[in-house]
Each structure stands twice: as C-alpha cells, then as structure tokens.
Length: 452
Image (cartoon, rainbow, N blue to C red; front, side):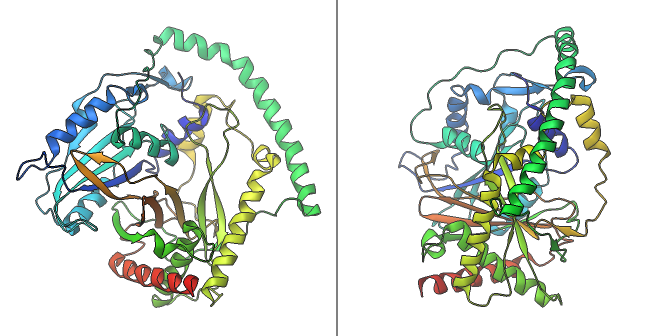
C-alpha cells in the first residue's frame, strides 16, 4: 500500500515545517484496582499494547523507494517499545508539564520508524478538572498518516471502551527492484494524467470565474495584513490550555467553533492593541473537512480564510458575521470546480514533487496572509475513554506553526468539556500566559453576550 502523493507531500513538508499532530488526553481517578502510589504507567503500557495488537493500521512504518523514484510504501512492522515513551518529569506540576509539552511539540516523527507514538506523563499535579495526580497521554501522529479526524478515530480505538475489532496489518513492502519496475511502469500514466489534470483545471477555472460573476459561487477570500504574530516563531514552542464547560461556548444557535472564533477575535485584537498595533482587520485560517476525490488519501481537509471582524463591537453580531463568512467559505468549497481549478498532485512524479518542496523559499514574506491565526476544531466524541483505570477529563490539540504563522488555536471537545489549546513561539508571543488570561476573559464576554 503506497502513500498517496498528497500524503507523501505532507511528510516531505514536515521535514521543513514541523506538522505532526499532538492529541492530548488527560486521565485521572481510578477504578479501585490501583494501589497507593501507582502512577498507572505499567497498566497503560499493557493497555496500549493490547490495543495495538488488534489494530492493523497502527502496525506500520513507511518504506521509501530508492532515489525517491516513486512514493513510499506503508508496510508492516512489529509493535516495539519505541512507540510508547514515558516522560518522568523532575517538575510534575501543571506548569512543569506545560514546559515539557512545549519541548515535545518541537519534535517530529520519522515515519520510516513509526508514524505514531504515545507519550505518557504520569503523576502530573494541578491539572485542570483533576483533584488528584493525572496521567496525561499525548498521541503524536504524522500528518502523512492521518488528518485530525482520522487520528482522533485512532485514539478512540486506543482508549475507547471495549477492545476494538481486529483488523489486518499491511503486507511487507516490495523489494527495491519491484519498486523501481513499478515506478517505471507508471511514467506514461503520469504524463497523460498530468496533461489531463491541466486541461480540467483550466476548464474549471473558467467555470469558477463564470459562477463567481453570476453569484453562484462566493468569490475567494481576501487576504489579511500581517501582524506581530505573523512571523517566524523560532525553534521553541510554548503551549497553553484553557479548559471550559461546553456550555460556556454555546448559545443563541452559535456553534462551538464560531463561539471560540469570536472569543479568539476579542483576545487577539486586545493583545495586538496592547502591543501598539492598529487593528483594522483580522482573520483566521479555519480547518474544514472535505471529501477526498481519490478515496485513498489520509488527509481530507482544507484551510479557509474567515474574517474575525474586530471592528464589530456587538459580540452577537460579530459571531453572526463570522458564522456567515465561514458558511460562505464552505459553500465555495462545495463547488466541485473550485477543487478542480486548484489542480492536483495526483499524477506528479515523486521526485519532482519532493524537489519542489525542498526548493520552496520559506524565507519569503507574503504581502497578506489567509489568516492571522489558525483555528482547528474537532469534537472527539463521548467522554468514555479510559487508560489504566482512569477516566478522561479533557482533550486538547495544537495546530502546527509555520514561518508566517506564530500563533494557532485548537478547539477540541470531549463529552461536556471544550479545551482551547494555544500554541506559539517566543519570537511571536513572549507572554503567552497574559494572552491566555485575555482569552479566558474573552470567553466569558462572548458567553455573556450569546446568553443575553
């Protein structure tokens, strides 16, 4: 089973811009079977190992083709101790854990070893929603292996109630001569496919322009001026979390995503104003799930630029404007010609695609950005996950940073809680705790406006 070009592209981009996913699950409380002082690590190892033995999809690694003459293969690997890493922290306070989490978020997996890893942080004290020491699990997943929804489904298989149904693992990868023979056989189809994609893309571009002129398809989103957080964040990472009752982010028919975006608009505008910026416009790149036209890719999403409307003082009206703009962006994505107009890497030869990624100038600063921050929102289901006899209390996630994106937000719910995960770098935001205070106050303001 080969990586699709789109998935391989995510892997190769990740070598230049770290894009692994980090899904955090905080567990606490016991089922009465744990003795005093039991941090749950041994039981967690057994639990995860028993699950992985049944989940064939997790028993894989990537095998590259010599010379990158074709796309890598997913092939079977045995379960190994490298897939579960225990972090014994000197400072097990919540603040100490967050510092260690920042260090972890600056790492990347080597998918030729494994596309996933579970990190265990035992006996963390002072975690939100936890009256006793917590066992925190961070599920690190390569974006080549899964998008956010697919990774959340894998985490549910690892931590969900009951053993998952058994599933087969992939076979071994072909030997190198067979890989190269297959790569050579693909060349005529790649040439023909590239020509076909180019023709269909040009036709789709004409169709989209006509539909825009007729008002049938919304026009493309405008870009937004760069702010102080639209800069290279530097090599270090800082993570913070705001754990809320879901009820704080619902009301007046507004979704959690829109309510969170409204709160982010308030907090970010205030933060930038405190640093001397005159904020005329702000926007966010919002992650939207889309169908996979190939049916084979592990990544089926797009980022769309959505206005945050800081100039609108009434927060109910601002939330309505954000919701309407997000609906317009989704309506544009729903038009099949929009996706076709953007072209496809489906038939691009592997070596050509990788070289294009390697040669891309990451130091170039654009005149505008699609969003001043990123907002990725996923609800991860019922709060019925368990690990080592402990119950899940909350979950969080942290979209990756890039050379002109120094601040991102994850909005992740499980059961009746929603966590706003904030990821930044010291060059972009040297005072993240202050920003979290602004965000907490903004959530209260938005909740009050929506309920009022």
